Image (cartoon, rainbow, N blue to C red):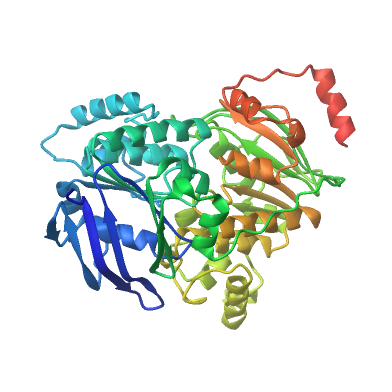
Length: 512
C-alpha cells in the first residue's frame, strides 16, 4: 500500500528550543493517526510543517509516494491537505462564509460557498451560520467554522489540532462519526488531542512525542489511560482530592441580570440569578453560544450595561464598575481566548503581566523592570511553563504553556473571586491536573470561583455546585453529588424545572 504521508528526519530549531528533532512519521490512507505529547513536545510545529506554514531545517516529506517540498498552506490544500488549527486562523471582521471563501478557488462565487457551507454543516451535524461575522462567534462556534472550512476542500489528509477542546459530549460524538466516515472514504487523519479517552476510542495508531523527538508508537486501543500518560509525560497525572467543605460569606451575587445582546448575533441574558460563596467552586456548563460570552463580559466589566444592583461583589454594587475597579476589589478574570484577550501575542511574558498585575508599576507610570522580570520568572518556574524565559513573546509558547502562564498570573494575584473560562483548553493531562489542583487550592484558601467550561468531566471533578447556561438563561444550582451527565445534558437544551419563587427564596436563605 502506498503511504499517504511519510516524514523522515524532520528537524526544526527555534532560538530558544529545538521543536522537532529527527522526526519520522508514516500515515496510511484511511488511518486515524494520533500524535500525542505534552505541551511543548513539538506536535503543533510538526503539523505546521506538514501544512506548509513552517519550513523545516532538515528532513524529507513524501506525499502519495512522491517526494514534495510544501512551501505554503495554499500548496498543501492544492495537494489535498487541510488543517484545523488549535488557535484559529479566522479574520474577525469577515463573515464565516467569507473566511471559508479565502481558502477556496476564487472562481467559485461567494453565494455558492454559502450554500455549500449550509449543506456540509447540515450533513455533518455542525451548526454554522455562514452569514455571521466571526467576531460575534464564541470559541466553540469558531471551531465549527474551521472544521467546515476543512471539510469543504474534500481532503486526502485532514490535520486536527485539539478539535474537541470546546465541544460538548454530543458534538464530540457527531465529530467522531464524521471522522470515521471520512476514514472509510480513504481520508487519512492526523489527530492531536490531550484527551486520552478520545484517542483510545477513535484512533488506529499513535505516535508519541516528548521533547521534540519520537519516543514511541502504539495502538492506543490496546493501551490504558495510565499507560498513554506514562508514554507522554513519563508519569501518571496526580490524583485530585476534592473534599466538601463549609462555604464562607456570600462573595458574588447576581440578581435580575437581564441584558440585551450587544450584536445582532449575540444572546440576550434573561433574568440571571446566582449566589457564589467564598470557598466554593460553581461550574457553568452549556453548549457554546448560549450566552456564556455575554455573561462573562458582564461579570468582567467589559460590558458595563448591566442593570444597577444586578451584580454585587461582597454586597457592593459593581454592575457598572470598570474591570480595573473590580480587580481592585478582588475579582479577577481569565478569558477563554488566550491570544488577543488573555495575552498580547507580540509582547513578552513579563510585559503581559502588566495587563492585570500592578505590583511592578511605580508612580508616574514607570515600570520596575527588574521586579517584573522576577515576577515572570517565578511564575514560569512555579507553573512549569516551557518558555525561553520572561522575555519570550506570548505567541512563541504552545497553547497549553500560554494557558498555564495566564491562569498562573491570576492565581498569584490572590483573588477573592476568580472567574475563569475554559481553564484547561488544549492543555495536556499533567498540566490540566496541575491547573485544576491550583483552582482547588484557591477554593480551600477561601476564594470563590466561577468556572465556565465545556468539559463536563472537568466540571464534575472540581465543582461543588453546577449550573447550566442555555438560551441566555441560567438553570438552578445543583450540588455535584446530585448531578448526572444525562441530567446536565438535558438541561443544556433549556429543559429544567423552574422553581417556585418561595423555594428559590428558601434556598437562598439556607445558603446564606
